[in-house]
Image (cartoon, rainbow, N blue to C red; front, side):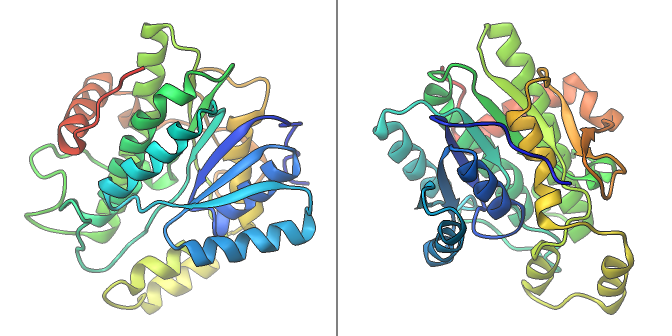
Length: 302
């Protein structure tokens, strides 16, 4: 049995990377539970296809597609302005989209290493830009998708964007550690400021999605060893991979700063996940926040 999302009638949810994988499953389950859903996607046509597939099973769903490219801060700003312009409070933000293991270094439109830019700096900027409408909601939640790979990550402030050397696995791990640090630092700031927002982290375990295929083809193809290892590792469905994120976003018993993943780490029903000690380093989290504000030019303004 997968997680059953409680009634979300009247709530507005934004999900990045919602055209496939865990994002699409989150969009489907939130829409089915009555939420108004914005599918935030890089390729609008793929988003529309996913939307039609969801509507085929849930004809009454209130779901729309809007374009965002998290690898382009101008696109992030345009998207955020469109949401703010609607004048609606945002109840749920799921920072779900990501890229994994491109074999050669790519840069975003703003000159960031692709994984750090798409997986962390773009979501950081989006979250901060949406704070005004998030804080208008009665009990808003921001859930940022991390990974078990975060435990292998390091934050190197001397070469945050891998300009001196590049390792695809290490770069992915760094971006996912940064995501976890983001969720924790936002939780601290919200508590200190008296904001009503809950900031939470999640990871999908080893979910059967396309992320492990798409990234390695950016400049190459997955190695045979990688493909074999990926298939032999215990997996669960994309729906099950979305469930920790959905639990964090909708369950009544979560508390500020919680982190959720599959019960058995790689697979299983949602449960509290263990933090890597690196994600608990408040000094690093504060410094990363400040550096991220400098790099993106976006600051937390309620």
